[in-house]
Amino acid sequence: MHYTIKTLLERVLQTEVILEHPKDRSLGHYASVVAFPLAKVYKKPPKIIALELVDRLLEDEECQAVFAKIEALNGYINFTLKESFLDRFCNQALKLGVDFGKEADKNESLYLEFVSANPTGPLHIGHARGAIFGDSFGNLARFLGYRVHTEYYVNDLGAQIKLLGLSLWLAICEMQHLKVEYPTEYYRGAYINELAQKALEHFPDLNNNDPNLYATLGDFAKEVVLAQIEQSLADLGIVIENYASERAMFAHQEEVFKRLEQAGGVYEFEGKRWLKSSMFGDEKDRVIRKNDGDFTYIAGDITYHDYKFKQGFDHYINIFGADHHGYVARIKAALQFLGL
Image (tube, rainbow, N blue to C red; front, top):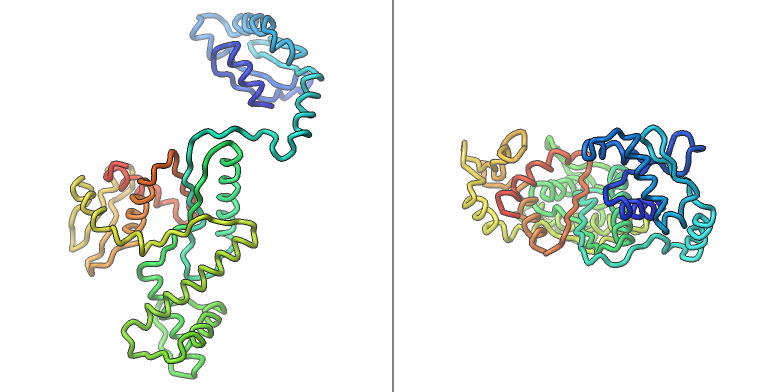
C-alpha cells in the first residue's frame, strides 16, 4: 500500500515523496513533508507550497478515487484513504494470498553468499542467525522479482583443516589409550570424539608414520561436518544452491595475485607479501602470504571473490558473521586493485 500511494503521489507531483504515518492518527493514514525540501526550489514558504500541492493532487482523477481527504497543515500534507480503496486493496490481498505484493521479473540477478562457517565443527546459534537472515533476504529478493543464486563458501584449505585432522588423531589416540601430548591449539568437544570414532571405522589401518595422516583425517572430518551443516540448514528449511570450495578456487590464485601485482596492490616486506588495503579505507595493510610461504585466510577470500565477481551478476551481497566485520574493507580493497 505504501508503495502504491508513494508511486501515485510522485507521478502527480513529479518529485520524490517521503511518506510517514502521522503521530496523531486522526490527521489521516499518511503524512508527507514534501513541501519543505521544495521551499528552496520555489523560494516560497512550505505552508504556501503545501497548499499548492494539495490543489494539484485534488485535480487528479486517480487521487480522487484513492483519497477521502488531502489537507495541508503547517507545511505538512495529510492523506486520508477512501474506504472503497481500502476495501479493494484488502480484497486483492485476500484473493492473491501469498502472492500479494509479488513483483514481476526485474531481469536483474543477485549473488548471495551467507553462513560460510568453517567446516571444522557444527553450526551454533550465531551461525543460525546469519542463515535465517540470509535465507529470508534471498526469499524476499525472489519475491521482488530478482533472480537469486545462493552460495556457501567452504573454507576447506589451510591450517584449520590440518588442525582438525590433528585433533581427530589426538582423540583416536585417547580412545586407544595411547599417550597424548596436547598442543597449544586443537579442536575439542564431544563432536571431535564422534568424528574420531567414524574415522576409525572408515580408516581401520591408520598409521602415525603416514606424512599425510592429518590431511587425510582433516578432509574426512570436513566432509562429515559439511554434511551435518547441510542437514542442520535443511532442518531450518534452508537449502543453499551451491557449496564453493576454497581449495578448488585457490587453484587459480597465481593468476589472481599476478594481476594484483601488476596493479600495484601488493608489496614485499620482512619476507611477507602484503596487500595495500590501507589505500582503500582499511585501517592497515594486510599480510596475504607469510614468511614461511603459507597464504593467510584473506588470500583465499580474494581468489574466491575474483571468481565470484566474474559470474556476470548484477548485484553481489555477502552476509558475514559478527566476527568478520573487519574483512569488508580489505576485500573491497582487493577488488579495487583487481578492477572489479
